[in-house]
Length: 311
Ligand SMILES: C[S@@+](CC[C@H](N)C(=O)[O-])C[C@H]1O[C@@H](n2cnc3c(N)ncnc32)[C@H](O)[C@@H]1O
Image (cartoon, rainbow, N blue to C red; front, side, top):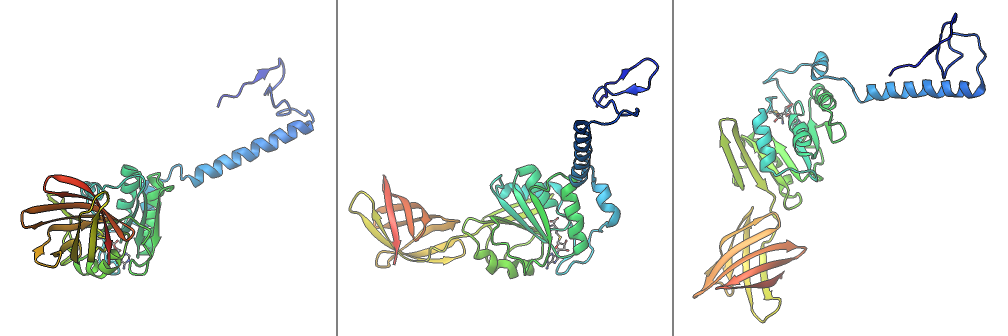
């Protein structure tokens, strides 16, 4: 800021708005108030600049703690996911602005930070090692995403992450398996992405393997098992199917039980199946809404809306 000043011949430099400076002139009450406001404002700006971490850099963060790859963690060591794979994992989960991403075992917070910086999401990292969690939180500030990301120190097996709609993991097969019951209870449609490790017999919905490493995506399936009656919304047609569900895979029988349901699966709340009765071929694509399935059913060449109810 440039300060305007006027010079009175034979006098010291005097500021046009602060004539008392550098002089013995008594201050008027208005000027006293102005000065108080000015000082208060400076103080506030200073504090704000510091609080915004105006200039905490990643190097500053590492001054108090610098982790090393492979260092022990509570249930698994720290090894960071490489940058291209972080991006790919978040792309596979189709992360967007409206998502809340939880990285379980967050390390230095890089997945949570990338979710906010690259995809505009909100994110929470859960990290057991307190120094690591503090470092990750410092990186969050250094990267300027403190309004979207927080890193909490805690045990992933004792933390409630049910608010998430995306969960990222780089743990171990046995830890994935231990988390599996909790993941399967999350909202249908929640995306789970794991670096390197699988979920035993819960097969991934998508896999991506490249020189950067492997990543797997699961979409938490709704429970659609049971006996369903589908009725045409504007018509008389109806049919029954009995569905057996193993994770996202469905099998089952049609009507009184002689024809098999094929190509059947559930992806979040989306349900798909096919079956044939004699020479009538049926293809169903629907969505679970509450306890009903609203479906488009194509029987031979004609498509119409059916509503399924579960008994
Ligand atoms: C392989 S690193 C992955 C770090 C990060 N998610 C990434 O992909 O870059 C696993 C992290 O989990 C942490 N960890 C291990 N057991 C944990 C537990 N029970 N709760 C929370 N964090 C844990 C470790 O300290 C380590 O930082």
